[in-house]
Length: 134
Image 1 (tube, rainbow, N blue to C red):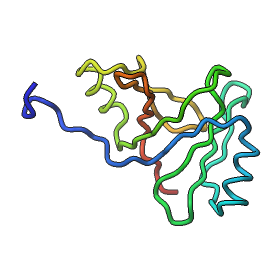
Image 2 (image 1 turned 45 degrees about the vertical axis):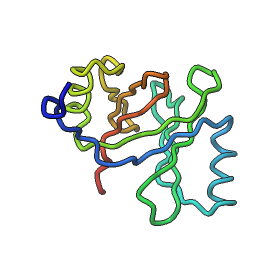
Image 3 (image 1 turned 90 degrees about the vertical axis):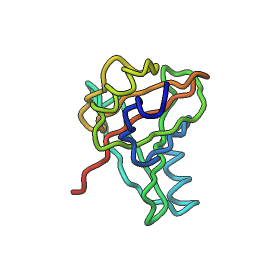
Image 4 (image 1 turned 60 degrees about the vertical axis):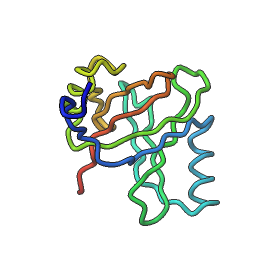
């Protein structure tokens, strides 16, 4: 495929790095009390609020660190999150290129609009809608 036939990306930044942690509260204490990071987001979501979206960052940093429990109770590696102003357009673009993406972006109250994709080695990348100021 030549460069001129590829639709340009809408990804604008590496904005969220995701670490798998065994205990979100302990991780929060470490990053805030030991490293001096600030809380950027801490919200519950899911049918009964069983999930928690927790983000910390160094003061003044645009990039954030999401502290997540292992998915499906299986230990896993870290992943990255990239930001785009238009998750739906990026999902469509990557799907058309045959990239291994979730069937649809996730619309979950309390969490940003996002979808996951996997690279050829199975590494996970979350494509996250740029948070709005407010």
